[in-house]
Length: 267
Image (cartoon, rainbow, N blue to C red):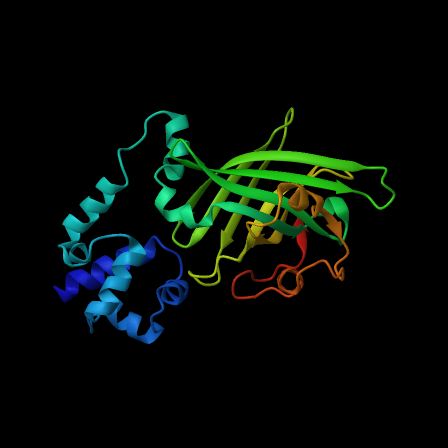
């Protein structure tokens, strides 16, 4: 039975990102968790419940025979889609439970080559509709001389895989660009800041793809839509209006999470 547990746990971990991140989010000691993975130790009833809740499966299923366990996981994933559209949408379906706690408004901060060294602030929102988690984003900015104004609106879909949020958006404009963002929370119970990477298209001085660190800050429910939109734009790096946590992440990120990257990278 312990062999089944360790094999099933390894299978789950293979689909959910790094072991270190899983341990942080569950709140378990990494060395102890390694013993569960190797089969040299079984978790206490309390830790077993925490592991089962994290992976959203019944506790008893963790001890099922490996073949049965894999079959149940495949069955839970749903039928194999056939049309290209359904195949694309499949990862975004059934995400309400995973993403319900992320619903709401955020300010998304990142560097973009379109605006030099400044920190760009956009407004983003996660909503639930027709069984899907949708993203809505608005970018509003002016250059220092007020001669150039950028207004871009994006719509997209959100899915969670492991402990990462995957956001795929398209710009609501003729031949608008497609953007991809991957976010994670430093701790499972901490939702104020979501960190990660975004990839899009720099629109000036000429269209060119780029990748950049991004950090999303959840907005208080008391912040009005007018206030949230008014805060969008381009800020100097040392602006007092930039949250120190936001600035620190964009300027000196954790190398373990995002190695060998600084600012934004043109591709």
